[in-house]
Amino acid sequence: MKLNSPTSPSRIKGQTPLPFAQIAVLMGVRLAEPIAYTVIFPFVNQMVEELGVTDNPDRVGFYSGLVESVFAFVQFFTVYHWAILSDKVGRKPVILFGLVGVVISGSLFGLANSFWMMIFFRCLSGALNGNVAVVRAAIGDVTDSSNSTEAFAMYGMTWTVGAIIGNALGGSLSHPYERFPEWFGSFEIFRIHPYLLPCLVTATTTTLGILFCLLFYKESLPSLANSSSSNYGHNRKGSLSFLRQFSSNKSHKRNMSTSSVISDTETLIGDDHSSMNLLSKLPRGEDGLEPEVMAPTQKKDFGFWQLMSIKPVRIMAVTAFLNSFVQGAWNAAALLFFFDRNNGLAMSTPAIGGAFAINGLVTILVQLILLKRIKKWLGITLGFKVLSFGWIFVWLLLPPLRTILLNTETPISTTSEGHLVFGEIRKWPITIFINLYLCFCTIVNMTGSLLMVLINTCSPNKNSLGAINGIMIAVGCMAKVTGPSLISALFAYSMDTQFMDGKAWWIFMVIMSIINFIITLLVKHDDPSDSNDLNEQDEVALSLLEDHREEEEDDYDQEVTPVDDRRQPYNTGKKESSS
Image 1 (cartoon, one colour):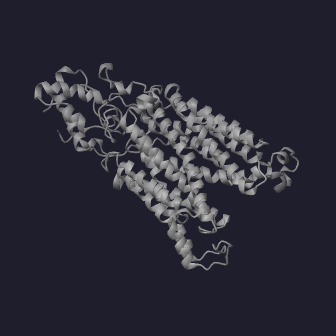
Image 2: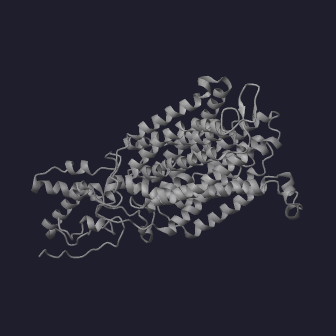
Image 3: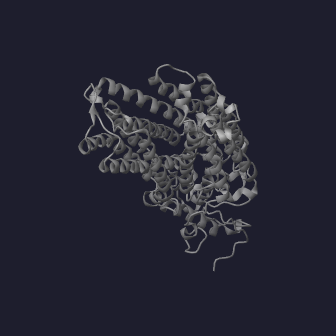
């Protein structure tokens, strides 16, 4: 292969600049959901109590937990259908409808005057909003293998920012009639519905997101996007079948098998149904190839069972479930363990809030700085496996925090059952270890961002990104319902009965995190530099293409010049004779 040939690896190395205009709109859209989702968290317990749902204060947490979890439960049944719809009618209309659903359901929640109304409006919010999958698919539309990690890092960071805003709104704007009489004392509705204001403010921010999307978001679904939006990464008309065709013709002259080349240029996960990685490196024409040389998977719409028949999709679905299960269970168990005064760390509510607030800021920095370096050092798949292995240590390190507490602080009293009770003032050793532990958890938690990249790579084509993300989000929703519920029940049972010395919940999650890591081993390794460079097999394939052009130049009136994944303008013109 010629050093300066169009197919030379030097022409293909590099990273595609992110389409910041499109990404900014998508992040604005994404921001609406975590705000709407978390705005109720600061006041939901008090709301349940004030509505008289139960006379037993110990049962308030149970009912508020139901209100919080039904969102994900209902979304499990609906998100896939919204994602499929976005593959057919486009991303933009589905995103807009989802935002409208957030506005309506969020506003109505503030008007709820019974427990069942709270449940209904929370279910309505989960049913109408499938944007979490659609936005992921849209990010896949406008990015490629070289820059998707950065885009999904922003995606993860947006959730953190939205959660901070949502919690702040819910905590500061509830009961405005009593707390801010000079501003809201004349509005009787805020006395009758003390939690309406934070819900209305959330609806207002979501309305701004609707206008932002309506005015500035360009449709990115490959089958619907026009030529002006082709620079956003959905124009993937080079295909594996094109390589098969010219390689097959070549075999008559060189007596070599195409299959050996094809088998070495398969996808990240290793299944012949997906050609995303190779497609990003093969030649393509701006005006498109002839229909007979287009890959069938680039045109075909895949249904649920067709997608689930693809081995990488099945592996990714199991991986997504276990990752979300372990992550969701940790979110619940950590709060319980930090708060528990008898067998945990006996932290006060403000101390827990402060620790997790600091952790939220650390999350933003980690997503922006460390995630890109993990991709560079290890690659997406290996990085995901290494961080998944870290979940084992996240769970193993919880009891040692209790040991550090016992060795560094003196209990102020003892309960009738003999349990030690500590004061509110934390000494520096346990404080340092808690914050170091949370920082480690934040790093490990980047598995979520890497998983989003891997999910898009297992899609058989760009037009199926919505369906793929819908399946994975639905699976994740079910895991986020079952994980926290199961670990909370097991935690309570372990502490009440002292089963396995009160550590049954911990042993169970260590085992689950080990199983989670084992499943990740089924995902085939990618090359650490696969996002920027050609691997050896790709060079062989592209070398075949170059040789074929040189020998068959008389059969072509025009040459389609291969370009890299940076989507540079396509060069066409008469091929010059080699000197």
